[in-house]
Length: 331
Ligand code: ACO
Image (cartoon, rainbow, N blue to C red; front, top):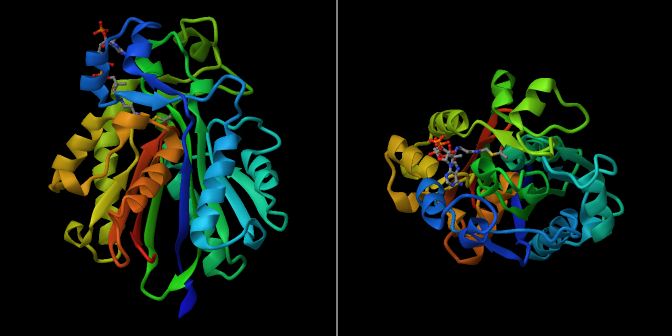
């Protein structure tokens, strides 16, 4: 029997731009090598939007795929939450652009920015509406166009990122299934380690950006790296411990895809085998809030997860923010 106290994922979808941008393409633009990028990050290629292509187009396609997978139509949706740190417009929001694109006339819509943790934040918010009976079906999308905010001349950051969107339709599921727990956190005092200026920029932020375009992403990679390794372990343990579960109960961890060395290090700290930690980083790079739903859609379509499997999603990123979720797969 479906129960609104139990909410879960009813359908998933994703969309990546067609244009493949390889490490060799970066070799032609900045002082880097395929070997450096592969060894230090695990990334071989990423997908990049064309200049004139808006990011929300990816969100529309991912949403349509997730709705079809859920057996629902856009008109069934009560709410759309888009996790993004790269909206096409500040207004209208990405969620309103996607609402229009799919024709979800009855749905409310808003964006949520928790950087790479955005999908887990959005799932958690969606769950509150479903559990309280306010809404039944909520579409959550991680939708990012990092290529539009990165500094194409800064080798420290440009090689890391890609564009993409991943979507999930959330709604009531059978008792005992679905999202079993979520855990969120933030440390605004560390936010200066990863910034993307928008309507305001400080002299300090201007000075950090050596090239002419000042409203681009800047990151202290090694500070974020140290934070990511620790938080990925802590978050995963916490979200399980709170509900009396252990890593032995988990079939697959689907983490935010930032750097293969972060994933390897966290895998070691957690003491789990490599096969338990999903990675598709080599193909897409870091796509921020889209990375977990894109990875989830891929593992689901490849038939790697079955009904009853326990999964952990874990993310970390700008803000700085972090989040994790335990999901008993219900499809
Ligand atoms: N090619 C060649 N050399 C490079 C490149 C490049 N693409 N990038 C940096 N280097 C150089 C640096 O200039 C430096 O040279 P120097 O020693 O002469 O100064 C050297 O390589 C080492 O640089 P480090 O920054 O120490 O390299 P590191 O091994 O730490 O790797 C990286 C950098 C990949 C950024 C890593 O720190 C990382 O992955 N950090 C975490 C990123 C992350 O998790 N982000 C998540 C959030 S993203 C979000 O929210 C949008």
